[in-house]
Image 1 (cartoon, rainbow, N blue to C red):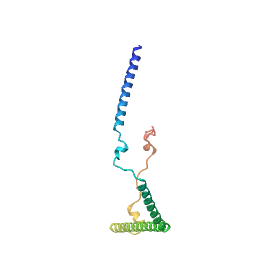
Image 2: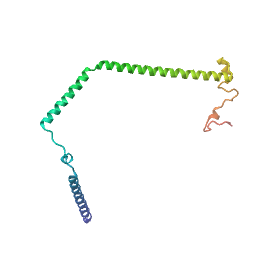
Image 3: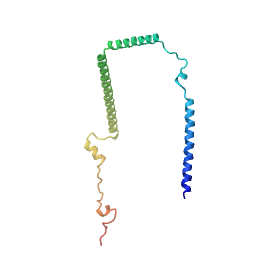
Image 4: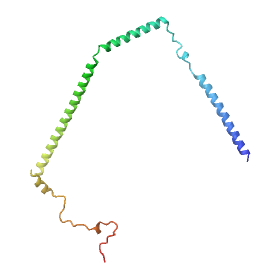
Length: 159
């Protein structure tokens, strides 16, 4: 009985060793395959102090020009203008919508009038209803509770 646990432990040890060896090999491959920054930009030259100062001065000039442009703008005026444009656009959309609804109603009214003239119905709503008939059909017999019972617990004939 002790042989089985020993063999299981030996098998686990062997699997662990193999996994460790594979990890070491993969790590070695990754390290050797890594490209350093110097290899990527080998042609790039370092800036001298003089070049660096010139670049900073140029950046400062650009920065001041942009700030001057921003200061010269009437931001509040632009905001008011944008609000006006937005309000005008909303009003125009609302007008278009209302006109569309109005046109739709006119079309429906024309259709209703043409149908009314085709049918030859009178203008009186009471007469039209009479011609159509009512929802309640005359002459229909009333059903009893026995007829309505789905289980048949109320018998039709009691003897």
